[in-house]
Image (cartoon, rainbow, N blue to C red; front, top):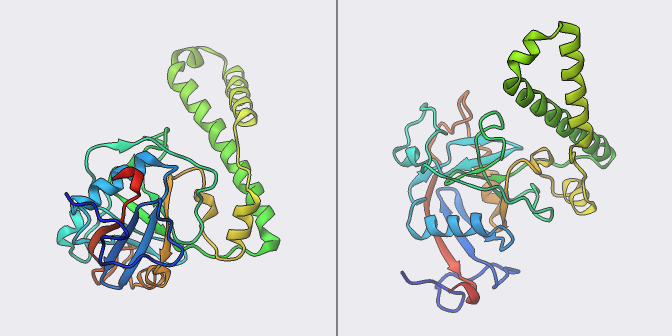
Length: 270
C-alpha cells in the first residue's frame, strides 16, 4: 500500500505539524479534523495507523458524545448506525498495553484510547479500535490546586480498595475464620498501607497551564492512554460535542466519520 508523505500527498499539512510524526486527516460529516500521532506511544500509534490504512474507520459513527467532556467513536457496530441503539461494546478482540507518558495528557483536543473499567481491566489496557477526542472545559486557576489534591486522594483511595479486594478474594477462608473485629482491622491496615504507598497523582506546571487556559479533562490523566493531539479542526470537535443526544449520550442524528487517511508519514517509518 502506498504511504503518503507530506511531499507526495495532495493534502496540505496543517501549520505547525511535525513532519516526524504521522498526521491523520479525519473527514467527518461536521468537517475535517487533523490529528498528530505521538511517537512516544508507539504501540497505540502503530495500531491506529494500521486501522486507518485498512479503512477500518471509514463510515463509522460517533456513538457517544458529551458536551464539555469528549466525543467517542471506533465501535465497528456503528457502520450501520441506527439512532436509539445502544453502542459501545463493539471491538476487534484484542487490547493494547497502557502507554502513559507524563507529557501526553487530557488537554482539549487530545486523542485517547477508550477501555473497559478497572474492575475487569486493572492494567488499564486500551481498546483496539475505540477512541475519544477531548473537548473538556476550563478549570479556574483558583480551583486547580483543590482539583489536584482531590485527584491524588482519589487515586490513593482506589489503590487501597484494589489491594483490599485482591487480598479478600485470595484469603476469604482465612478472613471468615477470624473474629469480625480482627478481620476488619486487618483489612483496614492493608487498605491504608496500599493507599500510602500508591503513586497518587501529581499535576505538572504544563498541565496546570493547559487546564486553566484551553481546558480539558484532567481527571482522566493516568487512567486512559493519550496518543495524539488535534492540530487543526478543533472547532469540528466542538460541533460534534454540541450534537443533540439521547439519554445514552448517543447522537440523535448520525455524525459520520466519512474517511480517515494518513497525510504524512515520517521518513524513518516509511
